[in-house]
Structures are given as C-alpha cells and as structure tokens.
Image (tube, rainbow, N blue to C red; front, side):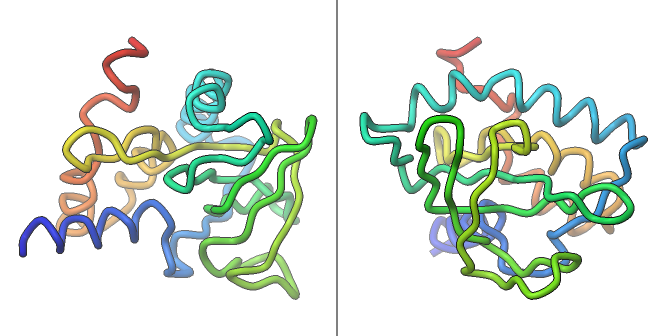
Length: 162
C-alpha cells in the first residue's frame, strides 16, 4: 500500500497536474540557469537510452521545456515525447500559466535548446534528472519539499552513466 502511494506521488511529480508546477523564471536566476545547463549536458545520453529508431521516447520520459514569456520563460513538463530531426513534439503534462490559449494535454512542438530538464523513473522508483526540481525545492514549504526529496534519486544520473 505504501509503495502504491509512493508510486502515485512519483508519477505526479514526473508529470505534474498542478498548475503550481508551471514556473515562470527570469533569465538572471543563476541557480535555475545552472540546473538547466546541467540537465541539458546529459540530454544526448538520455535520448540515446529512451528514444527508439522512429524517434518515439519511452513513456517514462518527461521533459521540462522553457517556453518564452514576457519576463523570461515558463518551464513546464511535457510527456509523450517524439523527435523528428531537430524538432520535438509532446503534450503539456500540466496547465500552462503564462501561455495564453494553451492547456494541459495540448500538443506542441519545440527545439532541443528549449529543453530545461528531464525526468525518468530510476531504481527503486526514485526519480532521476529533475535538476530544476532541486532548485524549486528551496522555495517550497519544508514539509512539501521533504516529500518530494524522498522521491528523488540522491544522484540525478543512473549509476551506469557516472
């Protein structure tokens, strides 16, 4: 029973339904910029591990994509990822807050340089990636942050990638 609850919470974190997980960031946030840079540096390895020959990603992959908005970017989780050349298609996994006329479940296309983060389920159901989530934990109430930290892998990379 506890394992089922943990899995449900892990899935909610990986593809969050709550609008609060859609975050507007400004370009000069050094912690977020560093997290995005770290996540992006591992994208070739992530895609090599989860993309099939047709460019369709394993369903366990979620990406956090930075869409431009007036004051910087809104980073939002997407799911059902597919790649065609340098372009990606996916659906919003949660409700955009600053992207007028778009909603959770809507399809969109984006370029690789817009990807801010990635998430995968790892060993023992703990989540890999989530570099930006780590930054956001610092702004959350302590009890909520503790619950999310319990779901994240100690290291964002699988042991075989280190």
